[in-house]
Image (cartoon, one colour):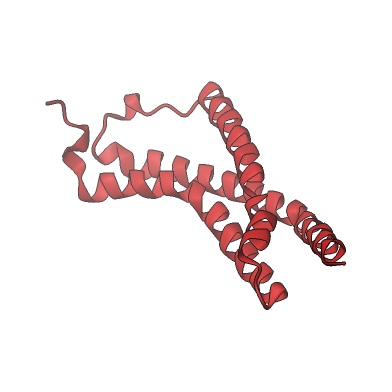
Length: 136
């Protein structure tokens, strides 16, 4: 009898997480586009303060290359998305619905904010470490 209860819990766990996967992926796509826009803004407004403008390259090729890299990382994020249902099996929380909401929220916002790390780091280096680009 306990095996059936566990099987039902796992099935409902996968169904719960899969029902939110589309929203997760839409968030990743929007975050990627917005983070790339931030990257371009940083490159063309802040970076010329410390680097010759001719060295800044945002072309169709670099955009496609970064886009393909981002698609690959979205695939990695979707593999990591399975940590949600897996964690339920390991942790076995008492309040399952609350646990799911918290885990999904933390994972979603971490995944959505992560792409902004690149333009944020670039902006930080320009503003606080302008000597970073100087030749030794």
